Image (cartoon, rainbow, N blue to C red; front, side, top):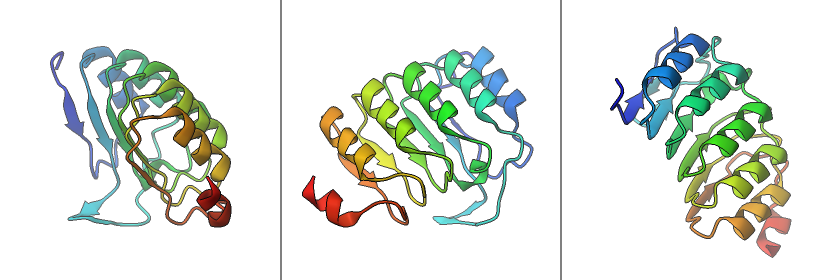
Length: 167
């Protein structure tokens, strides 16, 4: 698996930090990773959980897979993934172009600002239902990521749309 570049782990309820550690050790060229909940077509099934993935597993992953350019983590990890994991992604995966965090309830502006600061090649960020994100981190993305083409912020309840339009 040393030359593996793209991996999708959709609908894998037994996914744990051990798996992320194995990817870190064995897949140094990994450029795209999808860790998504139960998906049917384009529909994400709510309620799916990856109980075995934590900040520590994400840290191990990014330390061994610094070539990640695309990382999608959907709703199934929202209870275990915090800013600590996102900051480690930002500081280890400097060529990140696309990142998706859907329903990450513990993701805050600190994590988004870290991504904007460390990942200037970022083109696309999806923050749907990230309840703790507000317009200050979105503004920081605009200022620091010149290649940014899309920010998706649906259902971000702390985001003040009036302030966002002033940016």
